[in-house]
Image (cartoon, rainbow, N blue to C red):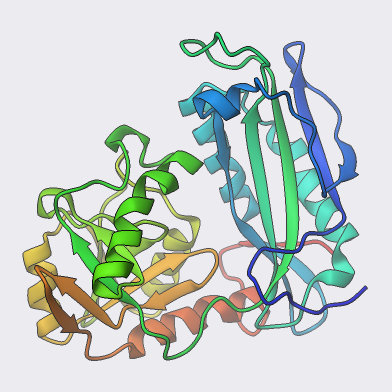
Length: 332
């Protein structure tokens, strides 16, 4: 098999995918099928009433040749939480993990070397073929997992301009911690507007001045040796990468403050030399290079600390540093 990484992130998939079906009140044994298509009723609950959620995680080829999964249990638990909040059948942790591990084993020859990886996209959808169930949850579901070799999403020195949006929310506040497609779609109008009008890469949603997250990533401010980020609430996604970054930052001697903070505090800190970062599975950390606040662009003077924390996390993922936290699951 070729380890060539596609030019477009997440555009090519391993030929097989595991599918777990919830039918007759129980999860059925995993079945394997082609990843090229999925048979689904046009009346499927997910297509009409948004009963779907997903995850994103990676498998890495380490320096010694071993292939590992990074924190799969955390992603499994987050999907189980999303399923409960959406009233979807909750996946069984053991079967879910076994399917992930087996998929990576089957796709082992396609796991690229550092700094690339194998991206995994588990997706849970409600499948009841009844369009009259707008007010009731789906009693059947499918959980399937795609595997895609991907290059390094992160490009050193790439601009990351954020438009600070204080009027609109990324999504409904009670849905923020659910990783579902509707949240990304609801942010899209503001993201596209920010790109068109300001040349921004993303939007930092700060309703009523409360700094939250961007359309696709968690956000943190690095002010000297203090990292400031919003505490875990229902309003935004509880990122696995966010948690990993904060944990590694503590190991590096940073003080982590999970508290609410305002756009005014953010602006003042950046003008006085603070850094800012976005965190997520694809890039791990993307240092912010500038903010657009009330029509004025404010440059971020340095990205040095963000780069250093990112390297500390990726060193664990690729086996260049010790996994002190038991995050890695050895696959093969």
